[in-house]
Image 1 (cartoon, rainbow, N blue to C red):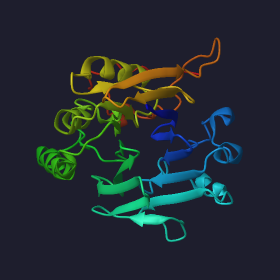
Image 2: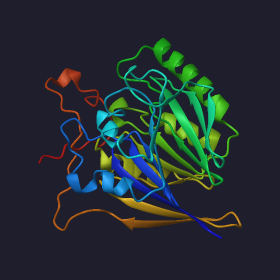
Image 3: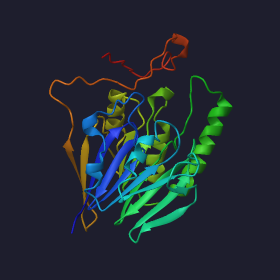
Length: 289
């Protein structure tokens, strides 16, 4: 019998994965100014539809940890799995790199090192392997960093990825952040080439939709399919067959008629010299509301 996984994109690095009667929520965030529209937000009524809800927080950066998630605590079916470095008043089972835990008989979670705060999570449920990188990435700033800093970042990133190589990963949510300027995709490319997830879904791209759409178009390979989800509420269904095939369906684009696509989270720079794209060869477009 096929297993069906439904993925919903919310904002930035926020996704949920639903398998049968269980829901897994990763790095849910409403946005700096509540940009996640009301109709796409998770509500208690939605949570009550599931027998179990597991909420993951990879680290304490505001764009990955939103206190809004703790308004769901009154629901008896909600559990939290959080990074070890979140504030002490945050409720949840804490994990640090190298930790493993079983949430249920058929649900296992592993935590891996990040190259920023917190951890990356590998979730295995009903034989499906889902990886959320958090802020694990090759964080380099070619226009600003020294050669030594870039080399150190490269070494740190490869050391963090090394324990993941050889792991079976069906879906990977991984940062592709154009703010890095040239070679902004180096981390995702290395991860795809070495870890070889079956499907890589970019995240953390701050509304630079046109760049990430182009990135996925040119970066997919025989080993790794790439599909980007850019619109709030966009959904994807993946069918896992017993003979090993994975079939992907895009269920909705969650776009209203005549709605203009805007780069809501594009960083604005007051001074030209503060803009890391000044000398970049990337075709950056700033969409105005």
